[in-house]
Image (tube, rainbow, N blue to C red; front, side, top):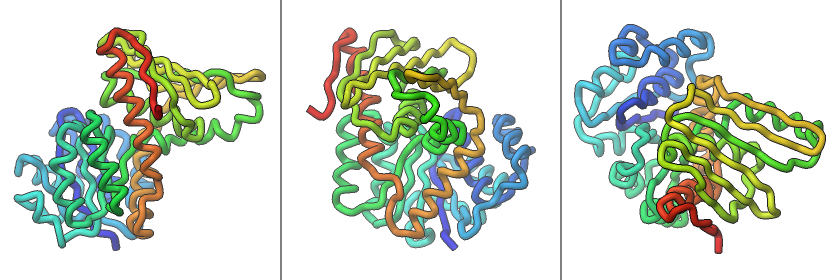
Length: 307
């Protein structure tokens, strides 16, 4: 049995509840609704027969507020609430850092990295070059760090890869989503990179505005893509692929499925004692994410990567 600790809570991000429920196989929809996440209880209810991941359990929880920790514990059957984040060390086999405000990731991850505890960090891994360099250095030193957007495991995107033969040689990809660039642009980049087999990004240019992000990407070999993130559009996360012979529009809606498959991959990684997702893939995505922000700040200049 892989015993997992889950830590952190950030505004608007219910992953400590939903991910623990997916692993532990139970949830209290009344408590999840009470704290403001009816959408989470809805998709957990719809997939109740698929809840629970054999061989793993979330056994410990810490959040920055004891009341939040106790709520998570009640809602999803976590047995132990701890008062200090370091109390998890020695009590669990792995830790999920389940908050998506990346400015806190280094400080919260450091105790577990130093202690050699396998760690999954919610997206985006980092929002600065310095923090990304810290994580890269730790991985190079043999530390177990895995991080990605669950969009990498979206069933809709993986299914379309079976249809590439009908599209012919790919010419263009576009991605469209809602919300802010740093926390949600990473979703679109993760899905785009995965479906394209993680090509090497060469340059990034932001030609939009704050709250209306339009980002032009060029990859090694000359392939082109654009990513669009807008705050004031209807909720959607979609990727379109255009080839010489055909095209496909893919809208990602199965949040439960991609969360579950992501968690299964992390648990398999812990069992195998190595991340199954190569850190260089995560690093390329975060570098692209940060380059787009830099381009916007510099008036839309082209930012070159891997130079």
